[in-house]
Image (cartoon, rainbow, N blue to C red; front, side):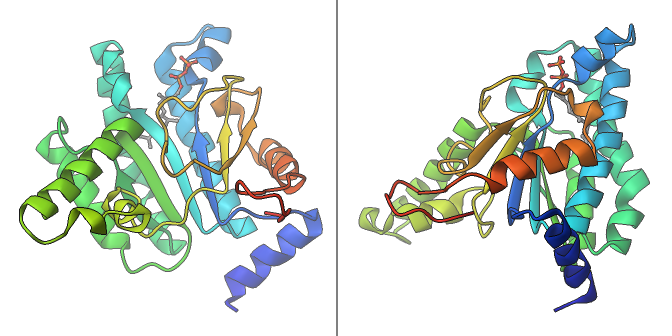
Length: 253
Ligand code: FPP
């Protein structure tokens, strides 16, 4: 056991919590956080980045292995152009300002979503951060950017259909395992827990396939107010859940 894992397990033990191997988060409410304070929406997104840093460090401390965050949905293109540009700029700035810290903390980064509609600079940035962190063995940070669950399923279907048309696969080879390998999240276990902030109780096209048996926890606070207290509250709720995965025998998370 590595020193990092041992420390993480101690922290979780102390708090008496079960830790999800894969935690997914819908970071909602940046705009409302800003509006409530008479600020611009963009200020809410800037505070959202700070909350994202807190989430990453909490995941490292408590021994979460994979964390997926919803940072730009394929439906978010309908927002005002300036706001879309600002969020795209945030991804650039986040990578520029945090890559060294991510490397230092042994974090591997994967960015999932459609690359269509992203400019060349952003594509290069995504490739670069993935390549530079690929050999890290600690927390895997999965950023869903320009992501939509339905289009992920459609893309996977198209990929499998192409493999069949090319004679590399037979229709009867398509099963849940081959389908999962065609998704953006290939090789990542399904999320055990999905947290959504800001009181909204919807999936909003996030991890539709992968979330089939995830536990859901909804938090009233807006995303910029997320911190250790809200993280622990969500984990406490998750720790009390009985997961049955469609069966009748109870299995704890
Ligand atoms: C949801 O709040 C937030 C977003 C759509 C953008 C999320 C961006 C971050 C949290 C920063 C991290 C981003 C990157 C790229 C690293 P909202 O705008 O939907 O809030 P509202 O529902 O109150 O309007």
